[in-house]
Structures are given as structure tokens and as C-alpha cells.
Length: 549
Image 1: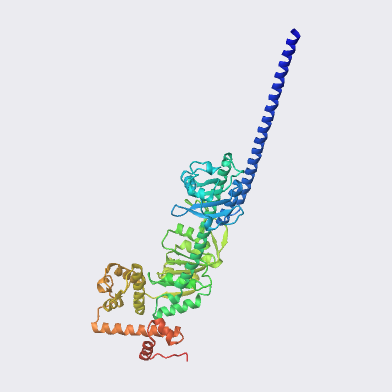
Image 2: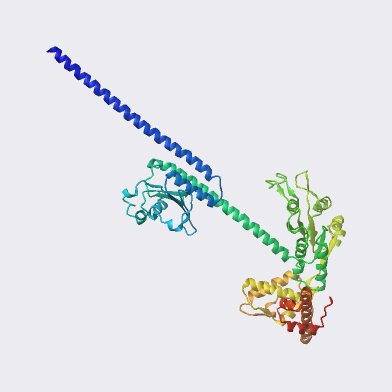
């Protein structure tokens, strides 16, 4: 009996041991299976991270925005194993706009395929958080959406594109099947992808804006150069008097050469205009024309402006600085009011003219410069030489070709065309049409002394237009500042003198038009905006002959 009991106990313990062994074997299989699944998931995620790294490198390889957007959409489709991908960016109005749509074969989608789940996109754009729906049919929030039903969607992923906490766009991708390549735990990887994509898009945008800005500046620079060239051709400067015509002839002769020019004239006569005309009719016209008023700053500052300085050479010199001679290298330097330059600085200027070299303040190194110098003054330099205010050797170096611009009071023939030119210029600026100058006002202008010369005339026309209100005619009352040069003459004599001057001006205008158009009557009439018959009558009236025949 005892033996049977022991035998049963032994069988019991053997059964327990077998059960324990089976349990241990079952746990080992389970642990092995779990370990295998975790290993497979890790390998899958590692593969996605490697693909993400490759995609990031690909995105950073281009700054072309359209090319970049295509790479981003193709990459999200591949990473999520979906069928379609869309990328939207905020426009100027702040609304999301489609920028690109592609399929899994990296082909553009047609407009008929642009139906997407707007509710998903709107939520991501509003909250700025990524959204992943593994099975839309089981999602209570989106399963009844019309787009989901129509497209029979199963999988959808939507990622925000954020720049400094601003949602600048979204990436959306979906499939009409359940994706086996993406799970909820993959969203951090896709979030990292979206962050890199946003940075790449912003860089491409900024690069595109920079390129456009450079192109626009280059275009505006070319247009400005062309405009300046046309504006400052000496034939475009208003001046019909014999004296100005002689000056234009001199400018035309000397402009192509490197000759130094000294322009003399009262303030406001247009010395800088002549300097610009010389520059823009010279081989240097594509380079810079740099201007400086030598009497507008202290000697120390003027030296630094002209020749530059070395860092630490004086108080305030916090960095090296190039002077205007270096800035104008290859071009022209216009030194206005040269007579006001301190004598100590005149020595350095003379060396620069003779040697073609300059030294920055505080520096012992000479720098070669290729600059044409045009100087101007309203002073009597000959008298300044006698008094020791101006160096004689510098005067001779500057005065290779002297040009003297007579004051406006000595070239009355220019007053009328100048007045009409300024009238047209400022009428257009102020939006005033059909304004004219009365004969009495013109007579007043012709009798004026014009101490401020052309600049005074221009300012006076502008002032008259600004203060005339709705009046269509400028009368003497609008020019109270004009100083008469001589006592008033008999009214009939003034009227006769004005008519004579107008006839002289008309004859000159007509002859100029005929010469410019090689005496082709039709073309000359069109340029003068008159009929052929009217032009023939004027030719007979003034006895004009074609001397070219």
C-alpha cells in the first residue's frame, strides 16, 4: 500500500515537472517570438531612418523650389507606402494653395485627381500637429467625410510644415488600401522629415527671392545707366544759345579722351551737368562717376574721403576704408568747388594726378588708380594763386581743357527753352495739365538778372506751379522774386523784342528739326508735331535753304 502511494506521488511530481517544462518551453517560444518581432520592427525603423537620411541629403542638394517640392512629395509617398501625395503652401492671402501633386510613380496628377480630405488638412494646419489614420473606415471622426467615401480611402497621413512655430504649409498623402509600411510609432520619423522639408523649402524660397532681387537690381542698374547716359548726353542739356552750343562742341571733342578738364562758372550754371555729359560720352561711361564737394567738409575728413584710411589711423577709424579715388577706379571723379580745397591736401591731389597713385591715411603703401578727374570751381583761381590760396602747379595740371559756362543773364536765348522745360517737368510731377506762362511773365524772365542762374530759374518755376492753385496761366504775380537786370523799357518795345526772340527761337527749332531729319519734310513735320503744309509755309517765311544739296 505504501509502495502504491509512493508511486502515485512520484507520478504526480513527474507530471508537475512535465507541466513546468512545457510552460518554460512555451515562454521561451513566446519570448523568442516577441524578440523576433521587436528585432524586425527595429530593423524596419532603422531602414526608415536610413531612408530619411538619404531623403534629407537629396532635399538639401537643390535650391530650385519646384524641384525640391517634387522630391519632398515623392519621398513622403515612398516613406508612407501610399498612392498619392500633395504639398500645399500658404499664399499671400494666408490661404493654403496647392503647389504640387504626384502619384507613387513620380508623375504629376491631373486637376481631376485633386480631391483630398480637406477636414484632415484643415485640422493639421490649425493645430500644427501631425495626423496619422491607419484605417479611415474605423475612424469615427473622418469615416463619413464625402471625400473619404468617394475616394474609398483607407490610409492618410498629414504633416505640418512649420517655420518658427508658424505653419507655412502641409504635406498630405493617402491610399485606398491599408499601408503595411507605416504605424503610429513611425510618426516621429515622419515628423522629423516634415521639419527638414520645411527648412529646405524656406531656404529655397529665400534663395529664389535673392536671385530675383539680384536680377531686378541688375536690370534696374542697366536701365538707370541707360537713362543717365541718355539724360546727360550734351545734346540733351537745355541750351540753345551760341555760348552753350560752343561748349557742347568742346565736350564732344574732348569726351573720348583722358584729358583733365576744369569747369568754371557761377553757382547754379550747371557745372555738374557738363561733367556728367563728358563722362557719359566717354569710354568710361559704363564705370562709376563719383562726385564730391571739396568745400563741404573739413580738411581731415576730406582727405579720408578722397584717399581712404587705415584702421586706427585716427579717432573713429574703426576699420579700413577705401577712398573715392579707389571707388572711381576705371571711371571719373568730379571734384566740385576745387578752389575750396586746403593747400596741404592740394599737394596729395597733385601727386595722384601725376603719378596715378594714392596712399590711404595712416598707410605707407601706394595704390595705383585709373581715374579721369574733372574739376569745377566758381572762384577766380588765378587770383587765388597770387594770394597763395591755390597751388599754381595744380592749377596747370587741372586746367588742361578749360570750359567756362557763362551766367544765365549773359545767354538770354536759353531762358525761354529752360523755362518751358521746367514748366513741363514740374507740371507732370504735380499732375497739372495745360499750364502756360503768360507773355508778361516771359518778358519779366527775360529782364531778370538771375544771380542764382539756372538753379534759381528752376526753383522759381517749381514754386510758381506749387502756389498757383487752379490757375492755368503763370503771370508776373507768380514770380515776385525776379530781380530786373535793367530798367523797364517802353511796353511796345518789350513786346517787339519778345516777338523777335520768339521768331528767332522758332526759326532755330525748325532748322534743327530739318537738319536732324536730313531735310525730309514729312519726318521733320512729325517731330515738330505740325502738318507738312504748315512746315512748308514756315520754311518759305524764314527763307530756309537745304545747304546739303
